Length: 516
Ligand code: ME8
Image 1 (cartoon, rainbow, N blue to C red):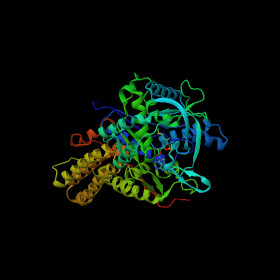
Image 2 (image 1 turned 135 degrees about the horizontal axis):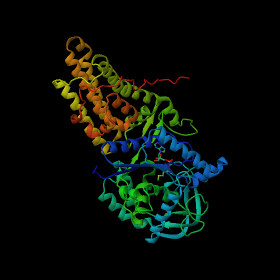
Image 3 (image 1 turned 45 degrees about the vertical axis):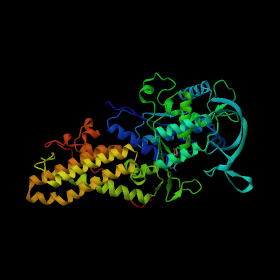
Image 4 (image 1 turned 90 degrees about the vertical axis):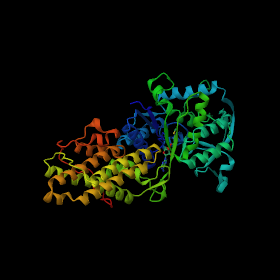
């Protein structure tokens, strides 16, 4: 393993409520990216967690009559359970209420202060608790009774308090230089253009401490001040690799982060504030921020009042984890908004997983089981069709890897599925069931080639549908040590004579209507 280790993160969610499918979506996509890099032989570190401080958490807890620590713990546990239920391969889970995180946030603060970028003043302005962000008058819209609203639709309130400020204004040119020198820093491209325009429009210093509540990390040597929740939250990416101990093995190995996967609503925090904080603290800036889109449900925004919030645990429970993972990867163009609908999930999973991949594996492997003593048959001398179907698998795997390099998760999945369709067409066209009566050797070749195509394609599928792809590789007797992308080619072709276990169905057909 010589390639640079790969450090990838999700945003850390506010545990002011239970996780919804937007959170699940981000976790799935990031896990697919992490697993794919591991398949490429990279040493991967994958971090997720919960963002537990701030006014939003304090207000939710107060409204529920519950101590905020309790609310944070209860919901954070649910996010952790969701990670497990989605079969996430995360290496750590940071809670921002942990002492190790307090130490990291206080250290980055001290460094920014030492660099002359933090000063004390008074803050007067519009604050949106839901966004945990300040807004300029010009960004607001007015409603009835003099109410004002942030672009997200959340109401803002006028706040006056003593506050520490971060000299963000001093970072305008440095940020523009960063975007120009690293054109891939912000993805997708539209987001980069938006951020570039925002920064070129001028940056104001940022209020970074609050005195009106205490649910946050204390500002070092400043009694009464807690840190603005976004300084605290963004620093989790450092906490996860051992900061402030920069001699820590993990920090040394994995920092700077290779990829922060986040939603489009928090791109400004990640691509303007975060690099500015890091530059100020003298810490290397992360390589890339990728903003995915937002999910709707049946074409509508998810909201508690509409009663259309989908519980990801219920989806996993009903459909199984892999169909859920697969659906979001394949259905939503990564970087664009997407929609969840039960019907769409069922259709995708049945068409691509059950009918395409599952059926092909089941049909070819049962024939091997019944007609070839359960052993991989001889490949014989290949026809053009045999060569073409395996070549299509190889091309698809290369295409999949290219797409994954740009986080085009949907295209990566589509590559594999189209090669599986080609393998299905090959199988149907060769009619091994007819060859059984006329040419046993040729039947064996067709079954061997089909099984080999499945083997090659199941390896990249380990990133998207880890459990089922793993079962398929088990049914092909592929050892755990031979499941990297490097093994998905001709050099590791299945060995004729290898005994295969009795094939088991892998994907159930999902029901269009819910059983009552
Ligand atoms: O923003 N569709 O937390 P959060 C897709 N704590 N993604 C969605 C979504 C939807 N409908 N709703 C939310 C926060 N997300 C901060 C992050 S990071 C240092 C701090 C995404 O719980 C959202 O874009 O509001 C974000 O990336 C993640 O879920 C957590 O959102």
